[in-house]
Amino acid sequence: MEQRITTLIQESPYNVHLFIKNLTTNQLLISHQLETSFSSASLIKVPILLALLSYIEKNKLSLNSTLTISPTDWVDFSVISEQRLTQSTFYDLLLWMIITSDNTATNVLIDVVGMEYLNDYFQHIGLQDTLLQRKMMDVERLAKGIDNRTSARDMAHLYTQIYQQELLTPPYNKLVIDILSRQRIHDSLKRYLVEDVRLAHKTGGLDTVDHDVGIFYTNAVDYSMGVFITNVTDNDQARQLIGRLSKVVYDQLVKRKGEKDEGYRYSHDC
Image (cartoon, rainbow, N blue to C red; front, side, top):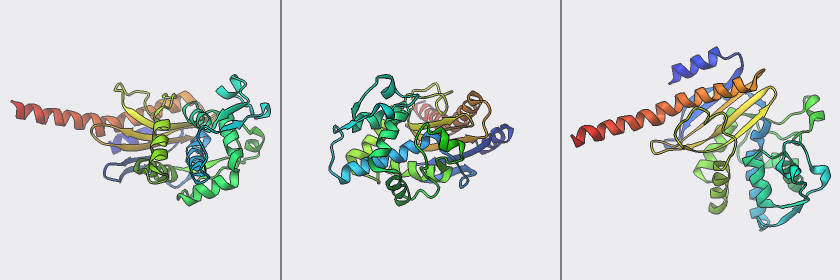
């Protein structure tokens, strides 16, 4: 598995950051450029999700509380904007922020607590390289080089904590996994998987980056995997690479183990 992954990375024209972790044994299996930070794109929305749920918990707010949305909040690539919504619940905004990567929902939620609160929370949960410096679709700040950042190391740490359900109270920990499992964008890590595997994940993409990171729940083993590609010139080609890397890992950790187990049972049944 490691050799095949190394070859795919070396053959890629892009810059690849990667981690693969066995969550059942808490063992980091493979990593590449773990500590180098890069543009997070929409990956930043997952720690925002956790921060907002922590805020809701601490302030004893209801997920069904309604927030006002100003028309000035509407931005592109948003089902909130498409519907011209002027109010929504915490729950719906959190859900849309993840499952369709809704930018309006994200910006409204950022305004609830502010960037300083969010960055403090990121540090509090052990994220060393994750920083929110602009709202979604703020192309002016992005043009000035002011961007949101993270690293493969931070994403590995974050998804381990999500898997272990140790950041929030039990109902909210389960809610995080449920929301991530309802992701509607499946053109990267699940791209070449035939099986209906459960994946709790989040994608992120800009013109020059493509990312996908999440937790695979399988009968053989639970594992997390993140592939983060920068210097991209062809987004679909980058997503194909993520899909190929993911299939190598899935075939090794899940399919081969399943085949060995079937062979063991067959030989003993005979």
